[in-house]
Length: 436
Ligand code: SDX
Image (cartoon, rainbow, N blue to C red; front, side, top):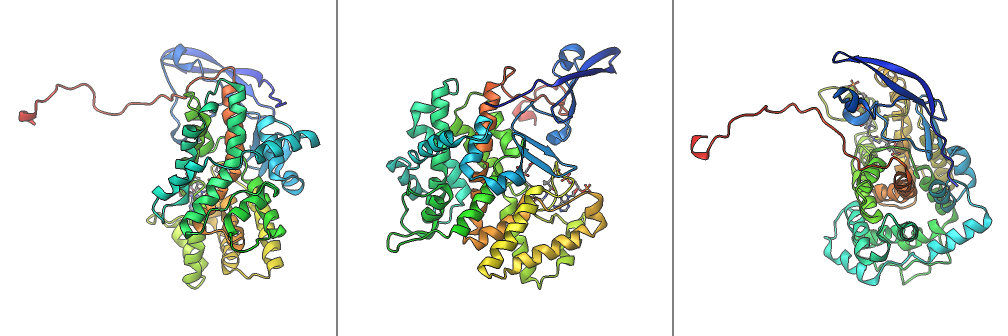
């Protein structure tokens, strides 16, 4: 059962504003995060706060994932990501994030078999794929088809009914890999491959992606294990852009399919999950340009250039992203095992070395993030670049679902509706058309 401790009440802070002397509560979380609770601020003072991009603003309390950006720490429900990546499969991580604890053998077996029962999508949903142009981006297909699940599975839409929430949770976990693999088959004109329920989650996805009806297909266990690791390190990351989107949309009591579809769209952006696709395109450009990494480091520093090093920097991590370290090590192992010399991996390592020696990056504490090396592994697995963010979405799905559940279970649950500071025109006389 998910453990969530009440924050500790600390000494309140005083705020002198608009001639008033206010006292605001101060809370401390289980890892020592301290926050000023401003939920009564406007009622008491008529004043709001402003924080573009929510750099300093907590939207909620949460018991799912803990990050320490300064120390480069990431834990799911208290377990360090390094341990989970070493010892778990992805289904165990889904269970951990959504239900709060690692499953015992019986719980894992029930969860696994329930998901296996839902891997097919309604046959009539396959016709959606005919409606997309052949070069449709798979993220557009993913968000569309996931949103459309609410038209075929109308019996599990009510967020207030725990049974319906459970069914839609299992349906999403089971069907997303199928929907994703079909979007790839759509792009290369090959027949869609049905899920094979005798395979585990990662094996099943790989066979739906790369098998054809004409040949037997054996999943390479090294590929399946690399995919397992990638999905695990992407599974949750507290209040990131796409997770906050899922919470925002879900807070209006929109159904889970609609909320996840919105999260997929948010993840697509190149500043967020789309960075893995953008990073590989950047590395390919550098390789094609003779591998001159310093040129691109200098471009990234040039304020007159919009160029940024994709896969570098992070809102929270001001140290190495622990996921980047895990992925980089897996890159090394997998490429060595496959005896692959990927020029992109070499350039990526040179780029990292050049940037981490440069004052601009050191001063701003810009390090490789989860997207910097993941593309190298996806390429080694034969995943096409446009599918990289789709893989990120498959990994992040349990995190999105866990946060959606937590938001609905919160005693203080309210629709997300931020305030603003208006800076437009003050009131003015209407001007009829013939006088404009
Ligand atoms: C993910 O939130 C999450 O947890 C996200 C994520 C998850 O698991 O959900 O971790 C996944 O989205 C990882 C991030 C992937 N995006 C990228 O790799 C795109 C490149 N990175 C940046 O655009 C940027 O670092 C962000 C978007 C990740 C963070 O942006 P912030 O926190 O708003 O930081 P900022 O843009 O204000 O940058 C601060 C300074 C600026 O310079 P100054 O104005 O101080 O002179 O750092 C510079 C920026 O110009 N900077 C970069 C840079 N990232 C920041 N300069 C060059 N290259 C970069 N990559």
